Amino acid sequence: MISLASRLKVSEKCSTILSLESAFTDIFCIVFSLVVIEIILKRAVDLTAIGQSIASRFSTGIVLGIIFGLIWLSILKRIAKASYVYILTLAVLLLAYSLSEYLGGSGSLCSLLFGIMLGNEKEIYRILRMERLPNMVVDMGLKKFESEVAFLLRTFFFVYIGSIVSISHVTIVIAGTILSLILLLVRFGAVALTTVRSDELIKERWIMSVMLTRGLAAAVLATLPLQYADPTKYPEADPIFEDLSPIYINLAVVIILATAIIATVGIPLLKRKAET
Image (cartoon, rainbow, N blue to C red; front, side):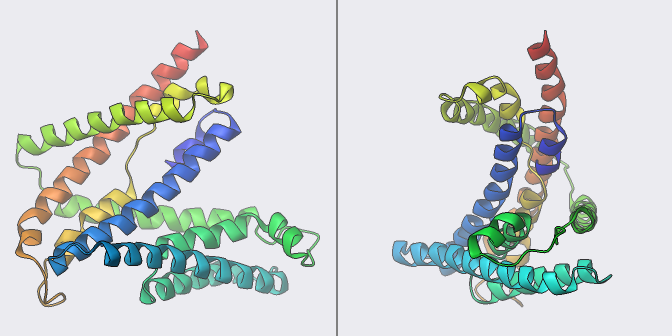
């Protein structure tokens, strides 16, 4: 959704909201999905443990993302002109992600905060009263490199998903389509509720409503039951994961395609309607 929002001819406020929504939605989905899987594996619902797990994932990811972002900004000032700065930034990001996951935090949230630190370089330098370079350290070259890496990873994973998916029953297609329409209806209500006091966003309410595309996060999460079905890696693995994992993957693919079609068809129609 982030790449699509940046290409749409909408207001900056609308584009920013859609981008932030996409990032935070993926993080919430990842964290809560892992918590649900943890509950299934333990075969018990402990509200205290659930709260602690969620708080730990969020707090650890946020703190490490900010710390790594600030440290790397200070280092970038000294090596900004080096030819290897792009790949070093990626390496530091992977290190931050791995450390966050190892300590029980959210690697995705850590990566998001790391990116926010780099993306708001001017404000960070001003708040911390750090010495700034005459030119931006995080330039368009670094952003372009990261977008190309992200594109490569998305392409690789979707090819992997396509190779293991097998939609052999019409029921899966119908269920996925119905779920996509339910998402659309819920989103219409949510957008109407959140934009009720914004005259600027009310004009773009319909475009925001059809921007419900599911992407890489949904595809990755759909493969989690398949991973946790392996008793050699997870001795406490539940047999239900092995039975339902193909259904999760097939449903996820149908929903990803259906929401993409809704957005692709809906956005031009609604923009044309708004212009007339």
